[in-house]
Length: 446
Image (cartoon, rainbow, N blue to C red; front, side):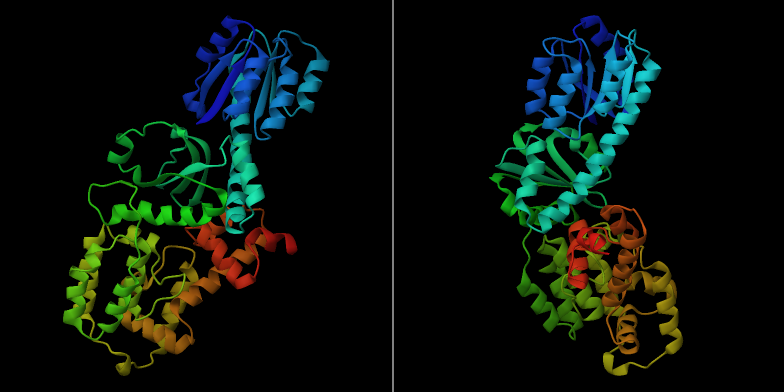
């Protein structure tokens, strides 16, 4: 919810605005009210505020001056000016300050509601742009600008972080900076004393799947690495039934990957490993990598035939994933030596991929669609195309991203989604690997 403060020297005016507007329906909340501008300014210096509703004649310095000071502290803040004077010079100054509205007393609640809607839209647009730029700044290790953004959101230099996975952002429970780091993934940066208890019903109704956090203080130089780890940590709900909040760090056991690789031609041993050692892992990327290894006898560095987001989308939990892999092993009788070219099948695969590469697509989804064995699909594609299934899809998505960056005004976040990437950190990483430039830099260079 957007945070609103109201400043007026008349208590009755403040109360009338508080009770006369349906704040909840506007996705807003009045967090403080003040009878003088000096107290309001002190509050803005130390607390996040999205919308400031200020009377012109409030003491000790008028509302226009207050708005001017507030803009210097927080460039994202939106203003609505209220006044008992129908004076054009005041309205003109209000417009020059960038105010979204000038309301005359007595307050017309329909009018001020319209202005609040406009303010919310502007805050959302500015915040979204700010947030998406932030992810690139973190990835590029631009510490100076990262710190500037955090400071403007009242986050002190030593801070805490959390990540949530789910349909709803928990921004209203963390006073500080928040941003989306992918589809249904949110990062929160805050100081620990600015956290409110998260209602259990948000978790019970599956609005929130998982939450991870680090309670020790960290600095901007470690932000990217720890944020990436927290994303993996939040996905531990996939491995633990009835557990949703995680402080435990997800560990990647590289030795298990090698043991599975060595057992690929021994079905009995492979199934035993899946039901014992694999069942004990808690790292979602490792689950995806091992899935790739078993399905296609390969692990693509930094990218999977099956991304970890797809695993969670396709399977309810680790037990369901294991059952699927065991069934695959028991039913797979195709060996790479038995490969026979089938151009018709290959053309069907390519057609399906080209039509669906921006959606949730995997060897399993192609197998279900075309009624072909997943192992056969992997082998056939590599033989006919001379590249892997993953590399082919990644190239399609990157070319699509380049086209959108050049020919559209979509944000980096929107480009990422349109091209089928579900994780912004990963999109930036892969785009830079292919183009030698981060998406924003690429767009500016064209």
